[in-house]
Amino acid sequence: MPRGAIIVDKERCKGCGLCLVFCPQDVLAFSGEHNRSSYDVVCMKHPEQCTGCGFCAQTCPDIAIEVYRQKKPKDGS
Amino acid sequence: MGADTIDKVLMTGNEAMAEAGIRAGCRAYFGYPITPQNELLEYMSAHMPQAGGAFIQAESEIAAINMCYGASAAGVRTMTSSSSPGISLKMEGISYIAGADLPCVIVNVVRGGPGLGNIAPAQGDYFQATKGGGHGDYRMIVLGPSTIPEATEHVMLAFELADKYRGPVMILADGMLGQMMEPVVLPKPVDPATLPAKPWALTGAKGREPNIVTSFYLDPEELNMMDVKRESRYRQIEEQEVRYEEHETADATVVIAAYGSVARIARTVVKMARGEGIKLGLLRPISLWPFPYAPLRAIADRVDAILTVEMNAGQMVEDVRLAVAERAQTPFYGVLGGLVPTPKDILREVKRYAG
Image (cartoon, rainbow over all chains, first blue to last red; front, side):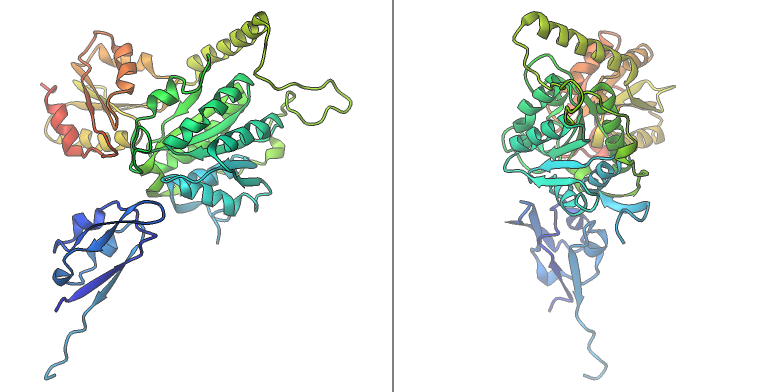
């Protein structure tokens, strides 16, 4: 079960690749899918490795990445 | 709160150049969408009407530049923008504007080429911008900003120079400068009503002799006269409008010559090299025409090599070699295809010529 997931706003992404450089888990890759401005947008290539650390969202100059984290299970559950 | 009410803002280069255009008193913008320049056009579409100016998304780049021709002939500060393939289409109009002695500001957010190329940053339009591009004997002042604050200043300056010398002025940016965000202190707005009068403009001839704006002179004697007059203005520009920046050149043994985005990467290289004891400097041409031949020549006399770095196959390096002649080595390092060199790439090249 992955600990995190991201959603990329495809129309905001300009394919600069900064998030790829900073992802510590090698989750991200260019998707080959182009947005309306023709930029190759980023996707999760290895979603199972995402920890939800949020480095990608912090480095994104265009605020195109939303990060979701898996809630920690409560004790005894 | 809009950008018109605050002075320091975080903006993309495209947005900042558009806002600077409005603040420079531009009241007629015509354009056509193309990546990576789109935000400039979009910003104009939202803000030009608020400034009381005209915004038209033309049917083509050719239509847009000719609308600039018309607006400029009527005495209005006018601007258009595009990216490489679109600028090629505008070249005919730019030649006509130069031939009719009209001021106009053109922004080229350069992308990879030739042909459609791609939408990544490149510097492959240096020749087109500085050596002609359109037909006939004309010159165009070309400014190569390296940061977004500088691009903003250049737009203000471009309108002043265009009016002063009555000709087209180009801002040669690139996809990186267009898309990147930086904090910008916006310049104070210019009220178009306070600008110097343009007695040559077509403003209605009631009570005076009609003005004629044209680039068409069938009589060779007459065309020669117009060309010679324009040429003398170009000589004046070469004497008065050369702009450049020197960084750590005083004790340098190797100097990088780079403009625009590459120059800001080169500043990092200078710091890295100095940290390793390599005496590296940077000369950054700011006006690409007129080109800073004399400052380069002066540096060439005291260094071993001037390494030109560009995001193209070697264009500005021809001007560097013209300036340096045989006084120093003039190697070239370039990356193609819309790739951007890293500081490490450039430092590796520097080391081939240092010590």
